[in-house]
Length: 536
Image (tube, rainbow, N blue to C red; front, side):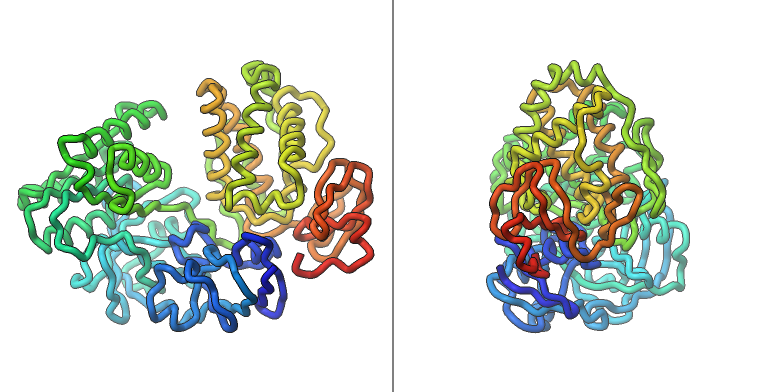
């Protein structure tokens, strides 16, 4: 296990574990967002050792020379000594020149960087508030504009977007870093058809790409599709119609769903894909750019591949939801079955009301077993979710979740394991990761034939427990009303089986074990005599 030194503390990365996951597992308060190497928010400096090439892919040469790397993409091959980034190197100030509302909840923010910022359309910058909250936004213009035009959607629970919409004003200063990202036009002359598909404010980077393609010249057609849930969401409709009237090669289409239901949304996506990738428009000779909500981007990406667009010709910019704050975000207005996000120390409602009809739809548990077997097979192979299950077997995870859900669905008192808050107390789980897991289990439900109305009811129950598990830092485990310390070790007798984190043997029910209070790492009776390594 490669050794990592960070801020005077030593830890080890497990086999296949990224540096970021190791830091979060130990409760280190480091910023992160996408965990895919896209946003570059988690960037750190390497003072000793050599991070693998994948951890530096896509970074500017000047950052690589300065030792910067992305811990989310760094599965180290040898020991590293790392430190937080030098903000004076990464960030520069920018003046707010103007702010205006383009549509309900959509704002144009115009910034003047203190120093010239060289970027390419399709890249993004990180914008930071004085308290350290960071979000990524894609400029909508060209480098020669000098001023940066950003399109910002105000989210009810968005810490930075609410501040930008409600408080930030012309004359204020912010900090920016970047540019980052490689969702840019090919360097070769543009002779292939260009297809750009965006949802919401995903239009911003696509507008910059359209302007660059028109500036380059040529005769290849440019097709721009902007998807929005309502007409007001087409916030640059008149501007794009005017641009289309002045350039014969530009074809702009505003797209809407037929109704508010999810089925209408999926039908609209399917119709958009058929129009964009039909055989008569030669998908195999197209370069495709997709930006916007991650689910929309994923759907369009799959449809482009299915239509015959070459994988290397598809460029995506998913607007991933950020969870970078030190404390959880305030709760969104909740559906009837969802618990509000509490303040620290507040009590949580124990369980949602039972749903016996859902239990019947799950064939009194038979279908639930099938779904959970499929789900955990995927979880244990998933690089984002598997690290949370290092201390248990797949079968034990299935059994515990089955008993827990059976109790929730039926009201029977048959589950005696940890409640969700205690079970996840040491885990740093963002809203984005919670949503990622929910999408995975929903996919399993649908593939096993569970009717959509029951899928939605199950997901509403999953949503109920969001407040119990989502957090930006570990919390104390509560036993008999007492908050246990986060650091150090405890001794307990197991009421369910697990695996020893030192020797790997299976620990049976009833055995006494030693466990790390923060990480949850467990040590069997054979390993309890030796002091467990601090890096475990």
